[in-house]
Amino acid sequence: MRLMIQAALIAASLLAAPAMADDGSPVGLWKNIDDVSGKPKALIRITETNGVLQGRIEKLFRAADEEQNPKCEKCKDARKDQPIVGMVFMSGLKKDGSEYNDGEILDPDNGKVYRSKLKLADGGKKLEVRGYIGVPMLGRSQTWLRQE
Image (spheres, rainbow, N blue to C red):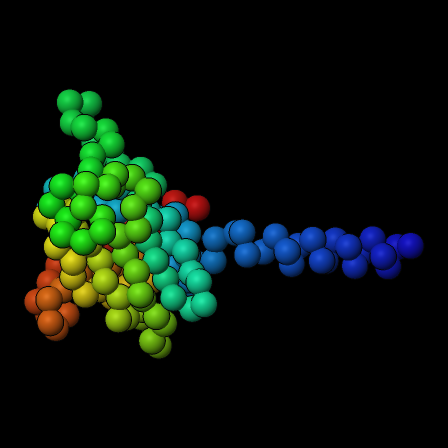
C-alpha cells in the first residue's frame, strides 16, 4: 500500500511539472519592457507547440486616459482591426543552440511584422527579444522579465 501511495505521489508530481515555469525555457508569462520609455508595456504568455514558440498578449499597461482594449488598426494581415489583447503577435521561433530563431514578431503600434529571435538571460529570469529587418544588426531589442 505504501509503495502505491509513493508511486501515485511521483506520478502526480510528474504531471504537474509542465505547468510550472522552466527557467531553461522561454515558456511562461513575461512582462514586456518598452525599449524607448523603459516602462512596462504588456504581459505576454509564451507557449510551445511541437518545438515552436508563440507569444500572445494577455494584458496591456496603459494610462487611464488611453483605450484599454485597442484594436490593431495599422495591421495589414488577418489581425487588422482585431483586439490587441489576446492576439498572437509572435510566432515561428525554434530552438537553435542557446537561442530561438526564425520567428516573426508584430509591432501593434505600427502594424509592421519583423523577423525575430529570443535568448534567455540572467538564469532564465530575463528574455532578450530582438526584432529586425533582414539581418539582426538592423533592428531593436527589448528585455522582458519573467513573471512566474
